[in-house]
Image (tube, rainbow, N blue to C red; front, side):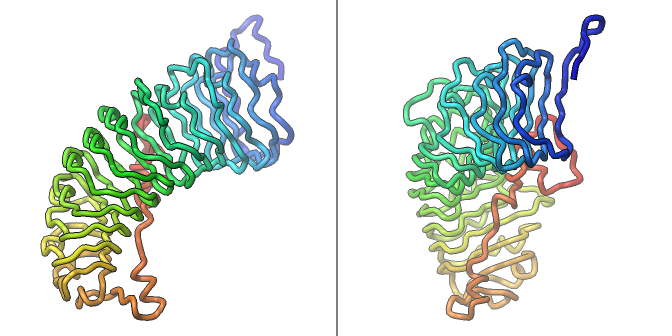
Length: 396
């Protein structure tokens, strides 16, 4: 393609390969010389091979690159030169079949980068330090194959100063503990999703500083300890997911979180009685989910649960509750309840571990938190289950 700009300025180019047209071979190196390129979009090209070409420093208009739904032979390392372009803002690499990686070092990361949306694309290697020193707002690395420490093991002075969404869910091989530095993100962080990894240790006391956090997901890790008392300050929290860890102790801190709509803490070692004030401050039009199954809770189910509007799911099987502790009001008002048969004579479906296979499947039923909370939609997570809702320009 030859563009004549002798008489008329070409202006800002959009290079758009978004239609499935069976492109083959590699991207030409000349793509990295288009000084007027503003956006690059490559989608549904199942037969492309190779990697992205390096970008010339003279490219000053490029703001976004989107690479989605491409084939298994297209991937490689993201060019450092792309991340150093002064106007570069958005990098989206999602749902690709190839193998990708991030450069270990970037000399001059663009101060304008706000979105690194790199989920479900076979990214490998460690998470580089330069990410934590960037101004990124959305950092979604979910469902890749990153490994190594989940956070830097040494101190970073300016630690993700603008971050709003941080998701490493489903990488499986990220390990380490949650640093106290997380508490410094309290002014901006709204979503922290670190489930399905190998995180150990306890929840740091500094997590109480995350006063704007709306979603905290730490499920399917190896975490221990009790819930810190500082969590009572997390009054913006709407969704708490701690399932499949080894947390213990009481959960009385939950009563102070007046905006909670989802509490998914099954398969831990929590004990004591369930607090009656959960969901006490939410609006009546919110769908509510409470899954406390497979813990060590005892005593009675609070009668207040029968009066909670829109309690869609209440799972509490495999605990030590008193016999017949669930009253008829709770059975009538909760849309779907799973309890031990001994604790609920009014339940249509209940858990009897000594019964047949179908009953054991009931005992082990739990909510899929990643889909339930819309995290598969990344920065638009809050709209994922509302298909008729228009997305905001700045959705986080």
